[in-house]
Image (cartoon, rainbow, N blue to C red; front, side, top):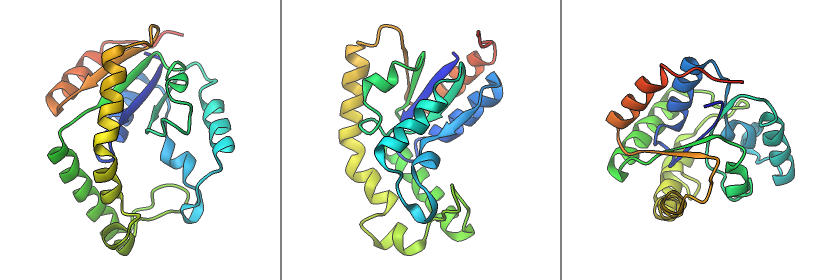
Length: 182
């Protein structure tokens, strides 16, 4: 594994898994949210976003976490990876993690990317709430990824589906013995 994409719903653990893999494999990781969301939550224009991600993926090794499936060209983007890992945990697990994370970030005013912070009103009383976004997108995202993983038309890309913490821990334990090949 040298070029890895980690996908899944908000709160599924994509960033944590990417950070763990980065430490074990000594490969840099990038959060797509950090590339896309500029100061004051301004979205990067689509062509510029693609260009920045293309620049990242020119390197021989990288780990990217995030979805942005449509913005980055769908399966075409995934063919740049040798491995796509789907954090496919149950809705109750993901929602409870997302709620805890959102509360923590709101209370601590943790900086995320590009000087952005999550705000209480936006998170809990707005149509832009990450919690609402997750609930709205859950089914569609799950159906899209299930279809792709079932059909597996990406012949040169390994697809890994992790359905719970135990599977993720086992995957990471196995990964400990892998050495990146350049």
